[in-house]
Image (cartoon, rainbow, N blue to C red):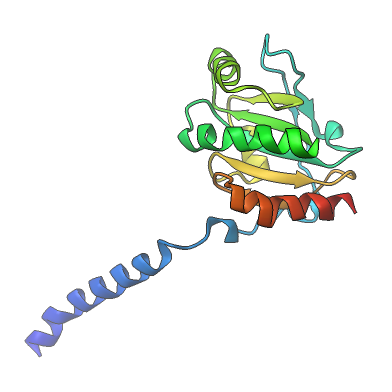
Length: 177
């Protein structure tokens, strides 16, 4: 009986380690957003001063399909995906809006000055309030919003050429139809 009592915590530890190990390779894109097929949250974000593009609000998302990308200058994966966003904009012409999360304006300007600015509008979300309303877990995250202002797609994490080809482009096409 003593061995059984001694072995129970060890067995529980092994089970927990196995559960965590199995979920390590889980696709972050499987996190379903409660916003899918619902109107984008109500918000207004000021522009990043001296950036040369406006901020935006909920009303600006209506009229045409928009890709909304949440990024920050301090985010390494954002830096990695940035050339892909520039290519997406150049190749598809899709309207691209950025939510700049938890950044000082000078850092956001420096980030976009260094890497290029593919965004048609960039809103400052210094206190993360807008990101919380959008259900953002962390940066980067990317959404597709249809012409009616309805969120139709969400991708968690940095985009790759494969995810753009297999997921984002089909989501943009579906939102356009």
